[in-house]
Length: 360
Image (tube, rainbow, N blue to C red; front, side, top):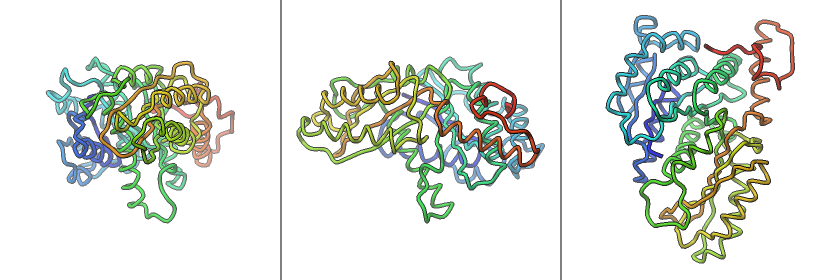
């Protein structure tokens, strides 16, 4: 899937840089271009692509200080400048646009929904958001920001590919080390998904293409991406168990959103040397995902890749009813209650009432 990346806010800019770097190192050519947008001038200086500083008349390049309402207002006011920076970048070759943002801060959580809405009005390709949830220890303000932003972004974009920081950071890591490791892990997973169907080494029996990724995300709402890999045997028949075990690990322990194993749709991609990918294993893995998720829309295929390992990528669409999302929305609501002493209600109704107001 050929795409243009737009990193909004500090976390969004850094992850966009990691995604572009991974794509270039692997030679996939799936990332056509990238732009960074922020209210803080310092956060844009290290990004290796064109940047746009917004809100200079409001915050003078110093950021919005975690205020996502101000972040939304600034993006609304300066969206013309951002859209101008995309002129000539979103070409006919582009099959999607990804807005990349941390949902806990101010510029990303506030600006991403506004930008996604504007992009959908202008471009006739899917507009997705790659959103990063804050960890549980990142403070009440970040939980509230992310809860409000997530509700709004899910409505304004074609789908939100969600990443939970807590599912990636290892114990004992510093904050900066943790975020760097998370960015590299996300870049590997998302980069492989974007590259599916692009010009790669070898020809598989049933190669995944862009339309299958888009159709998996078509139900909208929230999506998650699982990943696991293992050493490959030269003989495809010997790799049936490896394909099954990596697929199970990808869904059960390797997803960007843990416990997201109930989905409306799914795509199973087995990456590796074409001669080492067992067709029987791919089909068994697809059927297992169908049973595990309860979805009748489970697609599957190969991703020919010059590697001594086999990897399973599992894209899950429509996972907003998962325990992890409900638990996060409950956490965000509790943060509001602590500040405003609001009455507790059913977290399952978060998506259907105004208890946690939309950002826009």
